Image 1 (cartoon, rainbow, N blue to C red):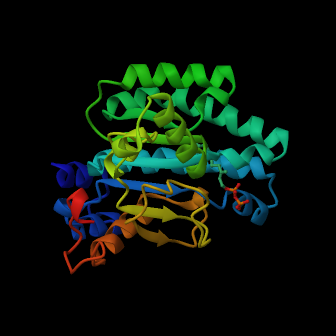
Image 2: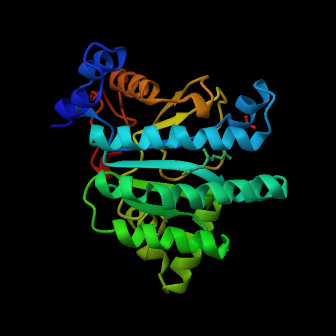
Length: 265
Ligand code: FPP
């Protein structure tokens, strides 16, 4: 069971163990999405180059993913590189691509041992060929894993995703009467995944930044001032506890953190 597994992983009398004991494992979000923000500011405060913030951010990624798997979260999606991020200095973009490639290669064993399936969402075909190759290998190796689905959003934009969905609909010859919400969801990169119930943003910014625009229609939003490189499992547990205090109404009447049938949203 997730609780026993987690407690055996954490120091018994630690603050993290206390947080975990307060979680209701029957009401965990089915899907947690995270806007990892604040890497540059984290580095700036330490008089380090921005890329050091991204490097430190990779350590946070590792801890959060392993924690998500041990919690038994069904889906976790991380916003790693947006369609707008190409505007950053070439050296920063190159470092981000190198970090991604290294992460995917070095973490493959951990993904396999934690039964995690890797997915990538975004305009993947525009990524450097070596990064695409590394991702393809890891997705192929983890495709039969049945635990947490880890989606990394790369060269991702919510509007671009909707444009791609409309293009796909036209290419499939769909007619206006074929289109409803379920069909649109099926044309998105996230097809087959539940919508995020919880969207976490680090570094205190109150923006969505073109992330999962369709899918977060009913997500609970949790913003922490913590910069992403400092985000640890403690922060994830705190976000989940906060989520479990929310009253989710989906435009209707009170139902404590329950998911609606698609038609009744
Ligand atoms: C936003 O911080 C962060 C990013 C654009 C990149 C996130 C990438 C990582 C955490 C590293 C690699 C990822 C994986 C999945 C292995 P920012 O640079 O915009 O920070 P700022 O707002 O403080 O400038």
